[in-house]
Image 1 (tube, rainbow, N blue to C red):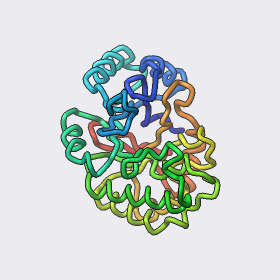
Image 2: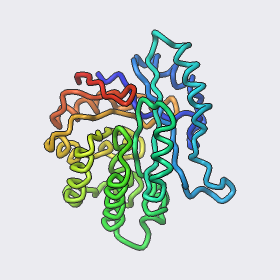
Image 3: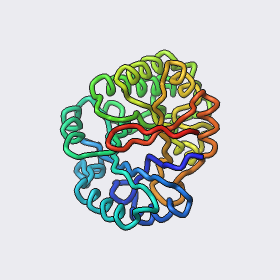
Length: 270
């Protein structure tokens, strides 16, 4: 059983309004022994004009203060870890580098919500071209991001853009295997792990992020560092589909999953 949820967003993230303590209490009720909050921080995010690019700028001091209080309050009941989900873009490499060194994070997820300045959540990213062309551009941008920035623990929801792609049920690992190989080899060369993110299930996907083909290939290439996160933004999805996630990981050849504390991986048997 996987008892650590390592991708969680509370009201400190711009796209959640759930108090952190409510999420902690739900995690305890579900029998989790570890929760790692990974609040969003995306520099130069193309927000609505009235938000002035601040929707996903994290007030890290306030977040850390609340987390420290909850760690003390629920000590002995659950381990709470200090993480962040950094939005990767070539234009913000320096800002991310400074930020990542400014706090003593336990865990940093690197992820790509944007592709060349466009949010893949919105339909206009896919309009005017084939889904295959759009996804290939997105995956190529991931490679560019990880080539330019390395100070993170795992890469999060690798095929995230598929969630919002027209005809996502037709998505095949084999179509993009060449670029996935380059991405995975780059991560391995840099000592960066991979995340299994169960959040795609709530979006109507049949598979996790990344898909089974990517997970198997990562293991074939020697990858062992893998964390598991629900990407929950409320109490309803904490630990979502973790039993199935454990089965998938075992089928792909993994024997352990990881939890990061003080930026170092701990291994737990599946």
